[in-house]
Length: 413
Ligand code: AMP
Image (tube, helix red, strand yellow):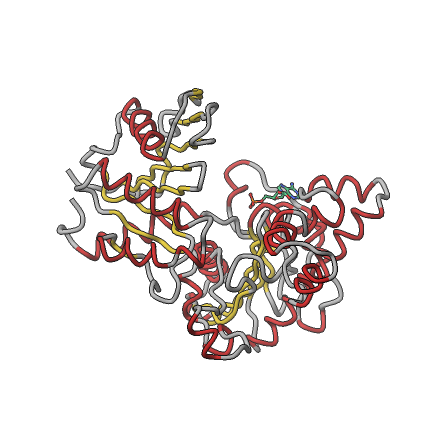
């Protein structure tokens, strides 16, 4: 029996999201989430997608990731899959920080686990949970290959002049302070899909990817390789986000500590959780901001304008970095759904070849077309502007499957 299925696991500190994919046709067999792991009211929600069956939801106390993954395995077994299924080729894990060491998806062994652990100081909220997901999955089925797919990997091609901060070199090197970038799986997938939409090989296309979700980042991709991205040492740098400030003068931190008497942890929490759209107007959901702007709400209008102004600056900067731009691709919750953000971000940029077709920008494709990449620039525009729905799970599954197929039967059962 050929093993052609991949289970994708995204283990957070208190949740595990999962999808089981059939790689023969890229279809989704099942998907679900375990939430509030470690709390009394934890719950699992499972959708048996292949059979079109009803979603099953259950509250149960899952004390840790192992209990959560055992529950996932049981749900999958109910649908006839399970972690022991010989059709399972591999488990692909999202890992947030791969540092400089991990430039590609990597087959997990003890040395790989040790290196992911060594990177914990760079991603203290994410890497421990990612590690726990991997070690638990390994315990539940030691025979199936586990593959780590890193959020930072796509950005490891950045040239040194884009990855370096202009800091004292010895201090920066000692503490691994440099620009790593995040959302790499999405930037890789979307830049490739944008090239495909233009009928080009990724190696022939220069693309600016704007991943605008609750977290947001931009990247400049030349010939399929990332040459710059807006997130840095952590996912705080760059664009204005739902609750994160993005770029600020670093001296804001000293000022708040010295003058406002805040603690370093307090400033960390301010910049990550109480800033961005939320900090400016009290809402982090762009839909709500659009509604309030319609009603003439000044704070919401300012939040929208600050968000768009920063976005424009990054688009301009990446036009300069790339020299020639073939496509600008909008993706993630805001990028895929907000026509007003796309319009405002590109307004007045005709001089750079950036134009929108208003009807295409406003269109909301339904049914099977809704998930497909589409052009929103006019026919014959110098730079193509596109909406490209991201699919990080599919990308993780494809990278995982490609790796175990490459590694041969030793890796693949
Ligand atoms: P993500 O992190 O990619 O799931 O994106 C989540 C964000 O997308 C939400 O917080 C909303 O701000 C935004 N979003 C989702 N749907 C819409 C929509 N129809 N219009 C504007 N923004 C949207």
